Image 1 (cartoon, rainbow, N blue to C red):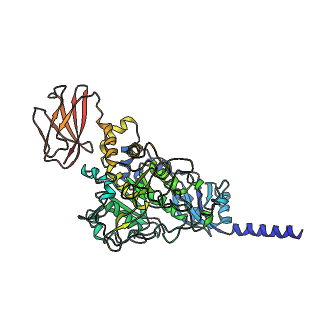
Image 2: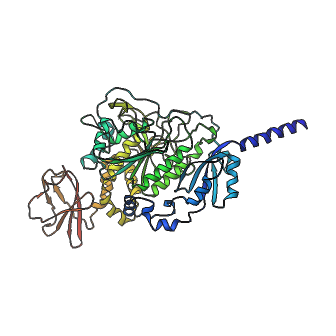
Image 3: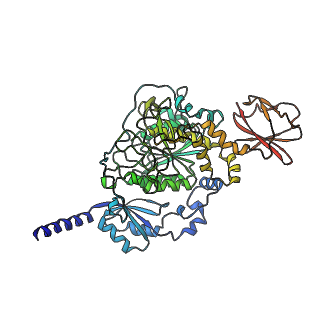
Length: 555
């Protein structure tokens, strides 16, 4: 009897102790009472550029875009012994920290609460317990692997993906905005390698969510190195993959710790990026193991639906943003698998290879726990060149952290022609982002034979670009043997067709955005385009019910 009483006291004491433990939780709200007012006035939620991005992609605003109801938020905020750490309008959730007993009282107190989800999954009704495999080591994912060796330029990491062919075509990201969500950007405001984007006003702004202030040129240098692979420029030494893109810089990662708060901060940053009209998000972050082991994820959680950050990434994609994420550096560790949000179905997850295309041992494995192919594609991440935040010189580094932005920059370049593509894709009822990803994956060298570590393999951006725009170049009625000579064009060209006379055809030249450049008459003379800028153009021939479109590269 004494033994039973003693065990009961231990059990009861443990229960009391757990109730008094400070915990993180997300409070999910039932509704947004003022949704109609906001939806009737989109500029109260997002910028004009964000509205344009939605309109061109045919994506309507919905209740997810509406801010959290102020009345609900204030009632939670005014609760004693409770701290609000963050919030998400997309998920209609408030991230709080308090004792478990305090958090539990909220459901009965407020009828606007839909559900409460604890970071400690054992406290949730259907929570998934963390893996029993003993892999609970907190790895410093920002360990310094840089050297002072001056490698030279970034030629290989661009050419292995045929990204240079996009640049030759005049696609350098000029019409694209990239949000970099990372751990810090020290010295981006002073280094010579970023002078070009500073002078051209390509840094549009940013925010430090980690410290809740406007100083984003601080904290961990990881973000500086990541940004350099896209935006760095040292004449004759280094060129990033998207040299003419514009950037927002957001800090959400606290490199000195690993907590679930960073997931919430990431979603906040993604929401901000959406509101500003961002086209591409790059994230070289991933979450599996936290300092509090009760918050850590298991492989079963890597299903793209469980983690808060992956749910946020899925919504970002549904708003028309291309999300690119490093798959992780755990390939040769006990965990070995990918990390959230790389597990999200819509996220383009990127693994790492070396300079000759061999898989990097550290590159994390897929598939997701629900057996989807991850990573989708690969880029150089072993012996990759970056700009050293301290010296400002070209240095070597390793990690899928750099594979991801190399790809993100080139995706921005590939997407740089979206105005022209939209006219064709929308006619075929295709989602523009899905179409781009489909062609990118198809271009990869292992598309027909993917593996758990390679995914579809190394993409060929030249091939993806040609396939991406080919949908606009399909003849309504085939004109056989049309030839533009020469092509590429330096100053002028001829049009030839061996099977019919083209002199009565209307000839129109369009730029990459679908804007008409000029009309021409064909009189067996060359067409002079010497005054045009370098880049891709489309020559359209029309007569009655017959038409054809031919791509021209102006050099």
